[in-house]
Length: 140
Image (cartoon, rainbow, N blue to C red; front, side):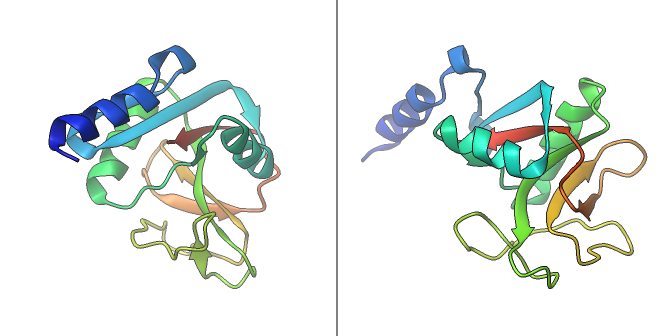
């Protein structure tokens, strides 16, 4: 598959009609779901039903891109991909792959299952029980 074929695949599966955006420099197709606040488990189900998964932030560049986006939309925190499957502070993505990048707030993680990114004040990650309804992000 050549570069143009790959680009066409990503841009076609990243339909702006369904709210997804394609960030070419990061090769990233994502959707910010705002205004339809869900708890963490519901957000993961929403993404799956949408043919996606909770967003993976696996680099500083992606972290900056999303915090800029959330800040520009006045969103103070959002659920992101990754959870502690055994509540032991070992975090993995939905497919069981360990997190390769993280940006924890000092004192986190603290034996709670789900990850939220805080925009107000620090742009760092915290974990929580997942019960609080929040905006969230999906990716394809």
